[in-house]
Length: 113
Image 1 (cartoon, rainbow, N blue to C red):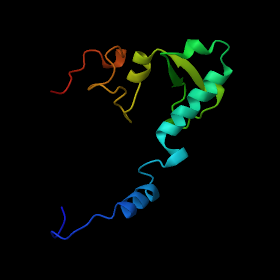
Image 2 (cartoon, rainbow, N blue to C red):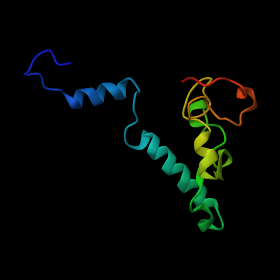
Image 3 (cartoon, rainbow, N blue to C red):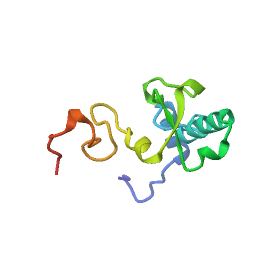
Image 4 (cartoon, rainbow, N blue to C red):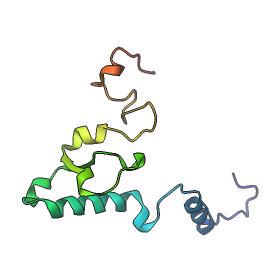
């Protein structure tokens, strides 16, 4: 909350601070740029480039776990299973509340309300 009515946010300084803290990517280091780069690398290697339409590029070893955009770490995958793999760090493996339902380690676990 601003301390006075005359308070004006310094967006430029906030952005610089976020970058220094590694809270957000900037330009070619952003998450979107990394994903777009991976897609271009994989599509360049495919013989049938139309086969990539409607598919997601999957990182076998996720970027957040030290993976990279090398061709050996990339594969095409259906969007639904690819997007259910993660997004959360730690013991929450899926994006949906409670993680992936088909995970045998989590069957029978009560979901939070």
